[in-house]
Length: 255
Ligand SMILES: [Zn+2]
Image 1: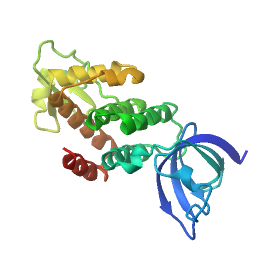
Image 2 (image 1 turned 180 degrees about the horizontal axis):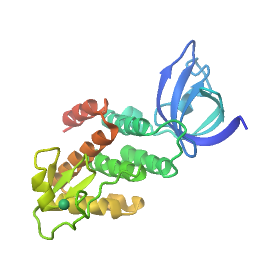
Image 3 (image 1 turned 180 degrees about the vertical axis):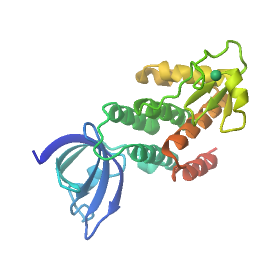
Image 4 (image 1 turned 120 degrees about the horizontal axis):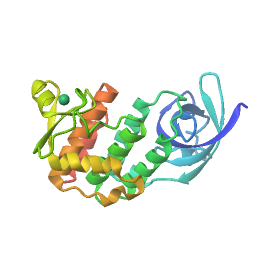
C-alpha cells in the first residue's frame, strides 16, 4: 500500500523549491521518515500548523521511492512552549538533533517514539528545565539501547567494590570500571563521578518513566549526571551536537 497512516513528531524541516518543505519526522512505527510537504509555505496551507517543529500529529503519508509525501496532517499536541520559550526551545532542539542523529531512515524503534513524546512533555512543562534535561537524556539513551553499564566493570566484569567514594566511568567503553581497571586507564578517556551521582544514575534507569520526576538530585549530583550523560551522547554520536553550544548559552543567560 503506497498510503499509510502513522503518528509523527517533526524533528526539523528545510525549504525545498517553490513553497514546499521537507520535514524530518520521528514516526511511531516507521522510525525516521523524510517527507515532502507540498505548498506548506503558502499562506493558508492546511498542513503548515501541524508540521511545525516538535508538533505531535496524526499523518497520512504516501510512500515514495526517495521521499514520502505528506497527504494529510492533523495536530494532536502543539508543544507551543517549545517554540515560544527560548530555553525550552534550545533543549528540545538538542533532543531532536540527538534523535535525528542516532536514527537511520525507516529504521523502526518501537520504544523511541513514546519515550521521545514523554520527553517533549517534560521539556515543555517541567518547572526545572535542567532537571528535565537530565531525565530526557537518560530516557533517550535507554530507548536506544545505549544505557551505560553501571553495576560491573565493563573491562573485567568484576563487581563494583562496596564503599568506594568515587566511581570511574569510561564513556568509550560504555560503563564503569573497577578500582584496578580504573587506575590502569586513568586519564585515558575516563571520568570520575561521586558515589551519589552513580547511585542516582542507577535509580534513573531503574525507575518507571512515568515516575521519573520523583527523582530529585541535588544541584551538584545533577551536574555530574549531566556531564556523564553528555559525554555518553557525544561518544555514541561520534560528534558534538551542534545545538549544544546554543543550549549552554541560553541556560547560562537564564541563571
Ligand atoms: Zn575491572
